[in-house]
Length: 148
Image 1: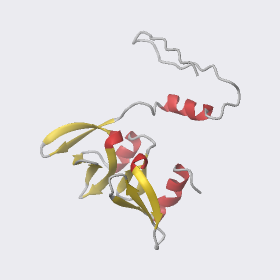
Image 2 (image 1 turned 180 degrees about the horizontal axis):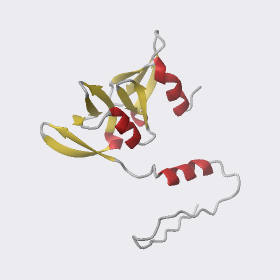
Image 3 (image 1 turned 90 degrees about the vertical axis):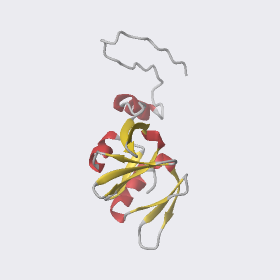
Image 4 (image 1 turned 45 degrees about the vertical axis):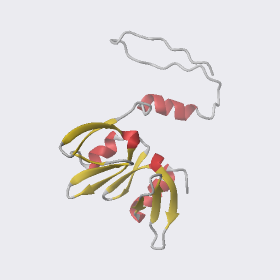
């Protein structure tokens, strides 16, 4: 597919114009990505050891609430964030999902899911860490990742 880009004045409203064949299978997904601007990178302000950082959310593995603080886990380091989990849920892209009362998971970092005996699900991350998906959030997560 050919892509043409027309640069506009910063004061003008951005718009996308698609010339596409009727019935294109991915059209609704493309429209959603453009209208919701999920292609934009999201950065999160965090702290660690008294230093302030701005990390790209694609590096986050999961975020958990501990002692009323949001603890942000990446492959390399752990950070603190001043935002509440519900605020982070609204801010983060749809690659993230609430998996328990106190944890938000980056679905792109999951290596595989494993059902457990007590009706919960374990998610094993690409860095080897494990998090557990509670029964309350399991149905929504299955729908989000394309399962039943």
